[in-house]
Image 1 (spheres, rainbow, N blue to C red):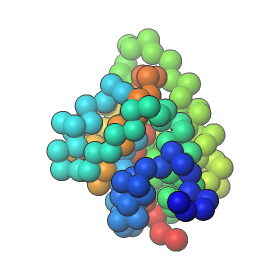
Image 2: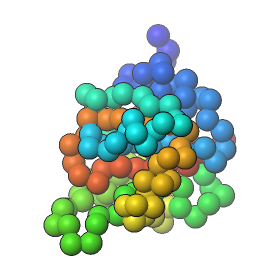
Image 3: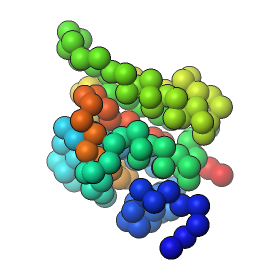
Image 4: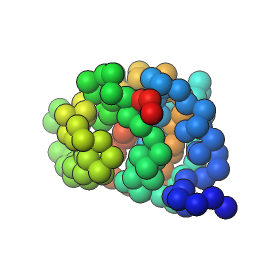
Length: 144
């Protein structure tokens, strides 16, 4: 056991967060995201019983966001015409504000196809059980 480590973070996820270097990216994926096919060149970590918000909150307790880029956090943009609401975007922004003073300005919404292309180049994907749609969030690691 370790002190002050969120219990939701598995040993495998802790190892990955530690291995990552400046500029590396990690994707916290919702339950609909094709984690295994997009993550063929990445480490895929299963977190099926957990929400995207809980994983994000735990990860950001340890993970510095990149201050050398304007948007170290990327969200999958809703496809035009899709009637889906995305209140989880606001939840993610509230969580990120607790850990980084830049708040909402560090977020960028990326078109779905482009988001998938970015996903193919991440260091790791955390496949959550998040059931909200478009609840995928990509983080770029910074320095301490």
